[in-house]
Image 1 (tube, rainbow, N blue to C red):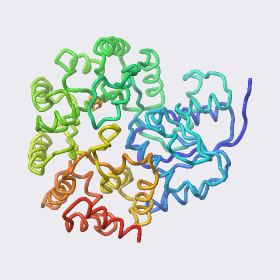
Image 2 (image 1 turned 180 degrees about the vertical axis):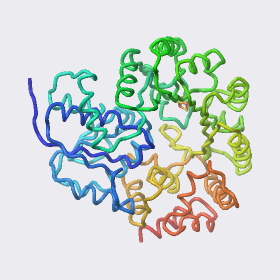
Image 3 (image 1 turned 90 degrees about the horizontal axis):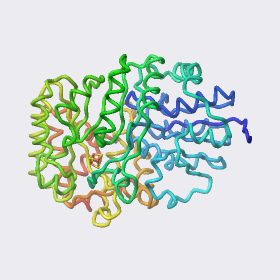
Image 4 (image 1 turned 45 degrees about the vertical axis):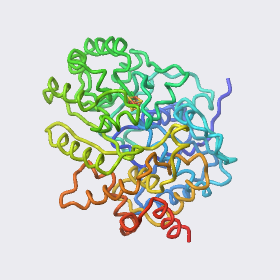
Length: 462
Ligand code: SF4
């Protein structure tokens, strides 16, 4: 058997894990410890720098090893993409090194478009990459418990949530969602075995975790499969409280009771918009406001609810946005419900063909993924803009589906300036405050999205 023994730089570039443990990274580090392979961890999340660009640049400058393995281990997809953006913005500092980027998620993207001769993409998670690359034999989870406990302590991963997927993919095809990729000519759901998931939950408990999360795009996508799992979980008992995401048209009272009996304490629903015209526009395929009302009748505040909404849908008018914000405000006031408002990004190639560039969308996405305590400097925004313009792969970051994007951003800015800006608008707040509020001024003083782009070009690329 081919066994490699060498020193790796493990690069953790996701700036904010939102308290969710990077499971596969922990497993990868545990495997390195178990096999007594030297490694050094470079963790962006641990940076003490005050500005985003400086944080990435100074982290890269410290890397001495020739082989850099980048972990994109995260329960959620936007942070993975943000991580990739940061890697590319500062890749010049890693010249001469071999960079391995690990993530099955990237197989949905045309990464071949990216021209970078020292970068190699592996469509597996970092732990699987190290096993195959190093030629290690299989190590059962239980054998890794001791090194895992050491990794959690050494990396200061305390009070973090473990997570996994029971199923991955979705049978629906909402136009704004990356999961469309699994619904087109592929096996629509990928299943994890019941025992595999239960074993991870037990490991999490043994390692002192207090919460667990199912990161399935639609936890109830296969009612029979999830029903069987919930029975097993209920029989096993002693579970950790857990959260899951589901479509509203898949939940009913009986399924809800089964989820509660198995330890569910938090559910996420994507409601998106109060307007049925907008729901049709994004191919949502369900009347979410009505279904949410039906659910609330038997909900009984027995779990915390997260409900998410969208703006930036093509043809959305300012009055539709206002109507949505009024609706979200009412929902957000209900005790036990927390609401969020996000912005559309286009993953689907056909949707992108009829869209146009909007730099604000790129800034919005990346800024939201950075820790609040980091400043965002002009050089950072400049590099981000250059990347979006020069690398076709990152085109989806600067596209919006909406011809009236500027009007929507101006409305969001107005709402944000209200005496008490609602919490669910906080995702946009950073856009208005970055670089001394310059972006806010550009938005407020422009007549078209083209003018916004032009002013940003003049400001950042001069
Ligand atoms: S239902 Fe949810 S996970 Fe499925 S395609 Fe729509 S947004 Fe994506």
